[in-house]
Amino acid sequence: MKRKRFFIVSFCAALLAVGILVTMLRHKPQVLYRATVLPSLGGDFSLPCAINDRGQIAGFSEVAKGTYHLFLWDREKGIQDLGPVVNQHVYINNAAQIAATVLDPNGHERALIWDPNRGRCVLPTLGGESATAHGINNHGQVIGAAETASGILHACVWDGASEIRDLTPSSKQRTRAWSINDTGQVVVFARGANLLVDANKGVTSTSPRIPVLGLIQTNNAGYIAGLIKVGQLNFNVVIWNPDSGLRRLFQLNTDSAGSPKMNDVNQVVFSERRQAKVKLFGRTFFSTHAKNYLRDPKRGRLSLDGYVSVDRYEDLWLTDLSNKGCIVGAVQSTRDSRSRGVLLEPIPEQWDK
Image 1 (cartoon, helix red, strand yellow):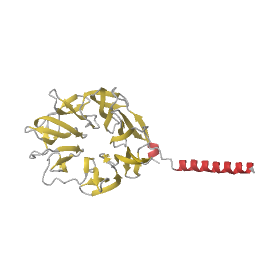
Image 2 (cartoon, rainbow, N blue to C red):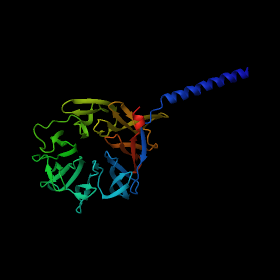
Image 3 (cartoon, rainbow, N blue to C red):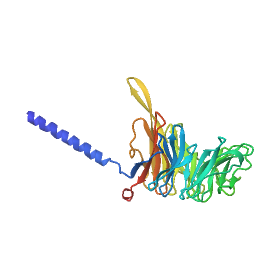
């Protein structure tokens, strides 16, 4: 009798183990990316901000406590220190030209362009003391905001190291340019809204209003990625085109939402932070965690969590993606200022399946 009972228990345990194994294998997600942890310039904080189609990455990294430098990374040369920088607005084009912002000797923010052949060049203002960069296209045009002689920041475009053009010359309020594509379409915040503007004409009475939120960007196909709020904690991630209108990608239920990043094939990456409630011994505790997604036109929404190792006090945040589908971001501590850069590269044989 005991042997029979032992046999039954063993048989049931074996069936359970097989069932669990089959379930795990059935639901095992397909591995689509290869992860690389990027080096820093020696400090505890490093943030890759932008990646081009050649796999070159630009960002900023701590070199000493509280001191940050611009960097350029690629697999051939490793990480290069390009000198001081003051904020996370760092952008790179396919010629490895980098737009960023530095402090001048008087402590004023100034936009700059770094060129592989000419090095750093501080860009002019509109007559005032400061300027900041917010993007660069593959023709080397830099956009951002520059102070006028009257002290107002205006959206502007730099066509070269010494050429600057005011995109909102008649405005008496602050305006900014957020994004530029290779056809010269610029996203400008003016008149209390985001407008789609021709870089050669500036804001006009016919400049279309962009019906999405966030620090939005435009790609070379003329699409813009952003958010639409549909509830207290609900957002739709959308893409918009002035001809085809809005297209909803997916909905988020989130406490704080980042700005979507998009490439020319309308892949969109997005990070969000959610607050979870945990009840223990009659008390309610809150914990926050970040979720990361890629929305691919063919595969739909894919989770990007799990490719990079993070502990319970860390979150992965995504910052950019290239036209080849390479994604950059950073694993950031939720308890202190530590941050390490990461690169996710698509595995071709997996994507081709």
